[in-house]
Length: 566
Image (cartoon, rainbow, N blue to C red):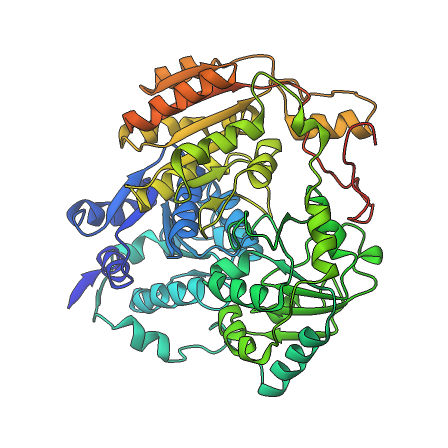
């Protein structure tokens, strides 16, 4: 078959099972958008208000489904507007394919109108990227990009296509992607999938069986590997306390008796104390980030570390290990389970349970509208299948602390990059992926300002996302640091100027609610749920509500601030 390069793009997306893409058109990518128009019954396009919103929407779609999200943008500023979204996906190992178009090949490198070297710009923040200079290679390049994005440790891949390549006519033959994935087209780029040996598995099992104070540190890799059931089986067989990273939230039920909650800078007392008092620290699909280990010299000093991860580059990168297993976490846990011996709950479990009883005093105070109430009420009304997205800041930590997540892929948040403005786009992507499920987006007033233009997208497509703006009139997390460590010098963190979020929502044709207390929240949220339309709830919170516990910078993680008086 003879197709233009633009038609090849559409055919390859269909091959990959892609039925929705997010993006924003422009001159260089017009040929592809013309083919999207002709084939809109096959590939549905969501037009966002800004390319960054499109990138985050593709990311949210991928996090919610486990599939590859797709985003498109034109050359120059359109392509560079994707950079923050691509970096966000890269840091959190999210599979997206970004398709950009560039000026024609004969104009590359000549400072042409809207030309930018997007492959050079994104090289450090993609698993791989391409510029396609031969139309005959376009189809296989797209197929390879999807393979790389989804296999091994997932991540973003960018394909830059000059405009003349999208217009060129080439031979196209459809391919069974399972056959394509089985061949090694280019071993330098294809992810290398490895598995531990039987001897390595036996060594790891022996470490676990000999441990008297075992501890599980669970990251987002467990969710990516679809290994949550296997994690639970291992934890319950050995009665091992489980702590979760921000990206690992929802990998293990929050209300399970073995769950210690979140670990790290804003982790629970149980998680942080157990981490530094265990004798075997088992890391599953986690990368020992600085927000978890804090001072590496004082981290888990009296324990051996067993690290299980698909990415060999993470082993011994931040923390030295006694043993490691490299490979798919799900496959490894399946093989480990029969080698692990039963262990009854004992004094170690009792000690961890005692630590679990601690609740910071501030979370027991009476206020008109407390974050803890908001998150618990959302769960009470909507239940476990609700997808929660967040921006970044105090509200993000409160969501992680207070919402009792129990199912994987229900908590979508920017962990590694900490991207303010992420969540509105991510909520759009998640709701497009699951139109019948409830998606609730939690935003700080500072973060929400950054991408609130996507209210236009939400209204246009009638995407029934409920947005909760945790509005304390400040950049809350930065103010918290200023409060605790900068002698209350509140430099440029006050947001005591517009917009009025209710009026902003109404300007976009969306219902807005102003909420000052618990009864108003319950009534407004219930109304938004029952109406099943987009809504913005402007929730006024106390300006100096803090996220506690908190590990001061540079301190070991078991030296927590449990109250503002500490």
